[in-house]
Length: 267
Image (tube, rainbow, N blue to C red; front, side, top):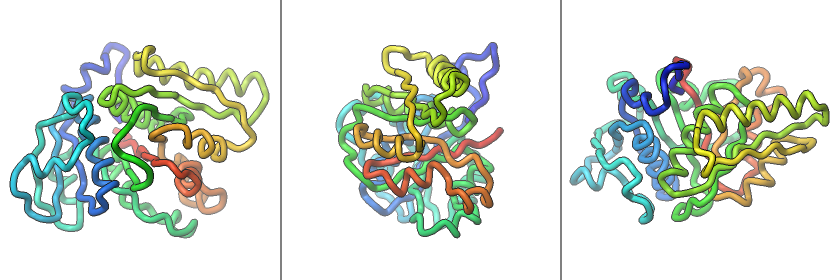
């Protein structure tokens, strides 16, 4: 996630970031969703898009991968194809992208949470957004963004807003309060207000403070009413994730609709 100073507007971020990178993806649905996310983020950051391909491509247009027909003018159109092997690490280290979009690996068991996956490893060098192959890809009219504060939530909000702008869609910033105390509600509302202020788009972005006994179940239930859910990666360590599970992974396992997970690079 790009840090913003008190005197620096988000419109100035583009002067500080490198190109975005779209990883090579075999599944067609995941590939088109990743292309949508990567093009929108590159456009929002006013930067080029590097497209990794496992096989040679005929021309630059083919390398950009298929995008939804609507709102193409809002997507980044300057793409550079890159011939890569199965490992993205050398490409990331060489080109220093400001963001990377790739397909999320299979979620096999809680035991795998003890080891960092590809997205977590690459997040040591760049912002990483992972996509899945669930649901429809042609229409994005609404996005649910569960937020809890912290760098991953900020990247999720930035990415969701970029996608929303590209698709003329609405964004609901969503915070679940499990406690019925006034303090918890006030804290949750502060998180929502700070996120909304950062995005500075009141006509497109709304906030929703939701009371429920289980945060993951609340997000899963509400995600069915949205075209896309974008949320931050786990903020706890691997041991805590093994014992308690992580919120984003529980949502990934339970949601029927597509989920994008944001792993922010702590610059």
